[in-house]
Length: 507
Ligand SMILES: Cc1cc2nc3c(=O)[nH]c(=O)nc-3n(C[C@H](O)[C@H](O)[C@H](O)COP(=O)(O)O)c2cc1C
Ligand SMILES: [Mn+2]
Image 1 (cartoon, rainbow, N blue to C red):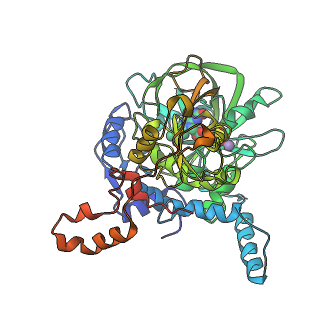
Image 2: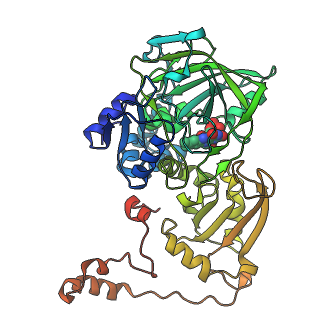
């Protein structure tokens, strides 16, 4: 596998070499039309699209760069997304070294962390062109109006950079930005997000903000990663890329931005400069209603010559953001295991819009263990917003939704095994009675015994390994269809798309 792309252009070239990109030279309208074209291509598992002539704009638009597992793996330079988890697990589980060989190996790992810290450079491609004052003009970019009830165009793939006044820790978050006019947008950082916390903590209620648009795919991904507030996204991006993110000082605000960005917006956000943002056709599959958010006043636009503007459309799943979320699911598994080591694996179904449902398999050891894990999930980072947690035993493949459904039905006495709780919910969820707060459902679909109030648990039906091996060996001779002989056909489960494609490793 090649190492990850160094910038967006390098990434586009890689996609093109791999047959993963189609250039569209016909003029298309960023107002709704690009959404309709892209949504069809995304849902068909099609290629990234480079719209070379978006109507009314001076820059081309890249979309669907993340839309398949293969492209996501190309982005990270891995064969499987699980390889990323293994890389992180090595660091997280670093033990005191035993012998000399062990010591040398640990030093190598520590060095790779040290080398991951962002580095400052003095000259950057993202500042080849600098526009200030009246020259600041968002109209030059093909900003998409994504869905019919959206009131305006939205910048959908930004990396929004702020700093914690107290600790100096830099935050990078992906928060959509509704265009207000040539030189201002809204800043949609939600209740539970770090960018918003940085504004809340500013003594004078005003902070500088820089927005990097058009990054290499790993750095762009890192803006969407739900890291603890004190962990820098750019350090993680550097670690995942295997080379430090290079930063350059902004021209009009006291912040640094990735030097390789195509476009940078610099400016200010104040807590008393707000307005009604939205509605917006969101990843929930519904329009999130208009709500008050702060306004971002742009003091400068800096960019590369011939800057390329990247975008993404969220909507009814599956959409392009599916694979950004799947990368997060895989990358965070070792971190979850640090706090909840009994977790074997977990899955956030795309159709559950990620925060609606978590399926988790555990090594169950004591009465109430599944219920303990539900509460752990409801206490972990942004997983705390999860509405429904289904817990299954370690032998169940959580990526095979038919299997999970089988156990969630077969192993459950709703009176005994269902937990109803309350807690914080996603701000965008339209269903709860109150916004951002409401009910939670836990389903214990593990096997239970008398120590949990069940009767003696029956044995599950399984064929012996000897007979299985014999039939495997004889399949060809039987003259039956080849695919029916696959071991995947067990428990009545057909095996989900994800299971087939991701080929998990278990520990
Ligand atoms: C395409 C896309 C769009 C997103 N839009 C928003 C948004 O508008 N507001 C928001 O708060 N989070 C949004 N998110 C989720 C955040 O990027 C994510 O929660 C991230 O962890 C935020 O960074 P933070 O943890 O540093 O706050 C979006 C994620 C993706 C992939
Ligand atoms: Mn953060």
